[in-house]
Length: 302
Image 1 (cartoon, helix red, strand yellow):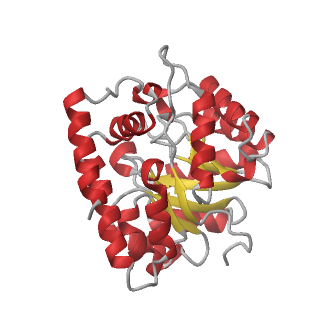
Image 2 (image 1 turned 45 degrees about the horizontal axis):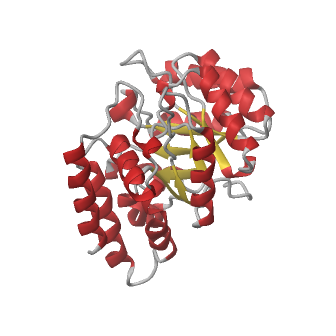
């Protein structure tokens, strides 16, 4: 059965990582952004996920960012930190580091360099991670984003992992964006672990199927609207709210979404540091920024 303490539910933004001119993380701005999102009613923060460009950062940088956010006053129990790396040893190091700071929730990608690997190979990788960490406090969230990682995590594999490590495997983030897959995950796993969808576009259907909530990139800029959708999910007005929320997300998805979200934050906060991204990503061109702002303005009027 589901753990009595709900370790992940509601609306959780996958936060962007602001960068200084030299490419280093602007930790003070990141802490301010996290604080603002929590004040708007978000249930937590995913730090150093895909949206946070984690895999463009070194292990040392990821450690420093987590330490800096905590030093800035963000509570450890509000964070889910991305610790997944290609090398299991790096995943273990980052997860142990998080646990040493009181952050017990880790979002873990599968080792993603080698493709067409077997479920047994993936099981062994996650099993090795959990056993090497060897900490009863660990709440591990499997991270399925096959369109980026190239590694699908099937429901049978996830069920097997949860059966083998019921205390450690707390849930999963399904960012496949593929409704039949998401529906199956919610139906088969929603009663035993926290299934968080990676897009608010599927939030209503996923909640009805057994999900706990969503971890959303768009929540960086539209948290209050997504929270309203979550809170009104059983009300007649939910469909109308969903149309507006989906239109907003579509406006960002018309561009590379991480540079687009950063550009929009820079425009709305007047803080240019938000525009910077780590290569191979590139900032939006000025004409693209203008198009984006028009699209978002149109979406929010729907």
